[in-house]
Length: 259
Image (cartoon, rainbow, N blue to C red):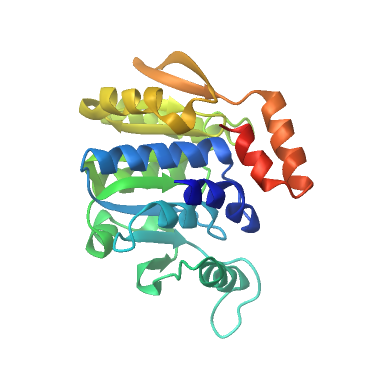
């Protein structure tokens, strides 16, 4: 456990990306809860960028579990048929001791995929992180894809919900929940919304409420489209302490801030 926390508070910061400690600890708590309840399945992410949250999922899961990476990988000039983004993603895996299985990488537009493209590679999913295109059409396509590829007990993590810079993400997630009528949110952070099938809602809600990794956060009960949700609040003073510690190279102290 200490090894995973070190990975979250030290190693992840060496990868260009956006997932911060609160959501990294939510990922950890959900995946651990699934493991404890023997809820099996593959994992996938749309919008890998350079692999920060992808490698987090790789670190948390067992070596024989499959994690699928989906991204355009179109940043930087291509060399030998690979963009600089793709090559850095591969290099990050080698550096972290989490070598990427390139058979489990889809280079392309997620909105052109069908669920079979995912299930054939990693099976039905227990966890799907969606951080691809942020327009309404993207969210509509990606949420439909996720619904088809998800196991009954699977969780979808939508990024940038309620971010005023990307208002159509919020619309897309709300549309998905209302139209499907089978999924509901159970956890929200500053950046992400976590949803699951209605019949698993109470179990995941309880897992978030009792997760030891999430005790440092303020748990605030709210509702979203009729479902009870725990909103995890990360106080401003803690975020400042965390950033100062990291800028001073004190990653061990920044980890203790979140105990």
